Structure formats: C-alpha cells, structure tokens
Figure (cartoon, rainbow, N blue to C red):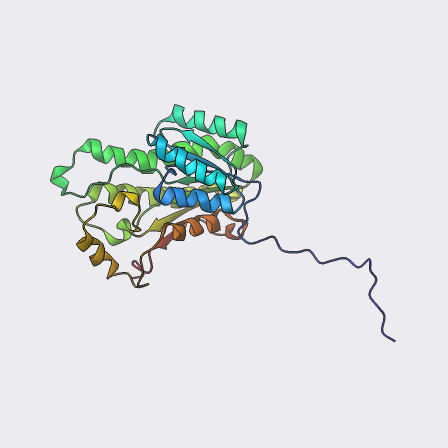
Length: 267
C-alpha cells in the first residue's frame, strides 16, 4: 500500500514574480513626457514608487503625474535641474522623506539636440551636452550611492542613443557626449559591482515622440525603411528594457549597452 503524503508536507518555495519592483523607489529624470514618461509608467506598473522629474514643463509634468496616479501607481512629482548639485540633493531629500531612499536611478533628461556641422557649434553647446550626459549621471550617483552601498543593492541606468554606434554626422556634440556616457557606464559598472550595484546603458534608436511631431516625413520614412524589425519602436519598448535592468533577474547584468532599435546596430 502506498503511503499518503502528510498534510504537513512543506510546499516548495515559489520563485519571485518576474521583473517585479515592489518596495523599490525609482527616479526617472526628464520623465514628464516622451520616453521618460514611458519608463516611469513601466516602473510604476512593476510596483516601484517613482519620482517623476521635470525641469520646466510643469503643465506636462502635472498631466503625466495625474495619469500616473490614476493608474493606481505611487510616486512623487519633483522639479529639479539635474545638472545642478544643490537641485539634485534637494530632490533626493524630498523623495527620501516621502517615498524612501532611492534604489533605482534612470538618467534620461536631455536638452535640445540640433543637428548641424561642427563649424556651427560653439563650445558652450558642447558643454551643455557634457553636463546632461556625464555631469548629471555623476551627480545623481553621488547623491544616491551611500544608500545603495549600505543595502548592497542598486540600479543605475543611463539612457544613451544609437547615434554613438552609428556615428551619425552633423551631430558631433551629442554623439561625443553619449560616447563619454557609455565609457562612464562601463567604468562605474566595474567599480560598483562588488556592492551589488549594477550600472547599465540603454541606447534607443529613433522612436518618435512629441518632440518629433514636426520632423519631415521624408526623413522619418528614410529611417523607417532601414529598421530590420520592419516597424517603428514605441516608448514602451524602452520602458520594458528599463524594468528588466532594474529587476532582480538582471542582477548579474552590468556594464552593458542594450540597443533598443529593432536591429539597427547589429553589425
């Protein structure tokens, strides 16, 4: 006669739900619209409490935050200049007081990105690119690193661009700064890995958002024809990549540059 199992037999432990971020606090810079908005929404859907940051577009930011909270997500709307140390520190203090210490930093904020020959740029514009893509990640990391090191867990995700891999012409200031941001990501990844902190970059292709509304259709059509995946990317494609890199399932992924561009930079 076979023995019946005791009702007191232990149930094997169940794996954690994939890509959940419950209990984590995330900051997405420049998240009032465009790709940043999609990243904030995706992190909120995964259970994170999210700081939605903006610099100037208050009306757009407030509309985004209303949409965010209407979905049942938890977070905070915070104005800050992410190239200014005092402004960043005030935002982090506000977030810590209302939501808890920041565990996940997504460096997404940018300024205008005009394409023009090098003769038409001045150094002030080059400096503005460096401020957004190297100074800002540096300041944000410094402001949140003590907590991440203390808990031996953290995520720093830089939003890059395929322009670095493609060497896009008449875009030298932006391309150079994104290249520097990529190098900074790699160096910080090896420096912070022993503390359980991952540092990665996501490099989207051209994903049309609000600021591309007036771009010439012929230019859009030309780019679209080159995409191996045979479709436009959408902001949610980048949001999904951010959630993955922020999750526990990506704890052994660091120092990487993940292209989200339908295969535009395979070669």
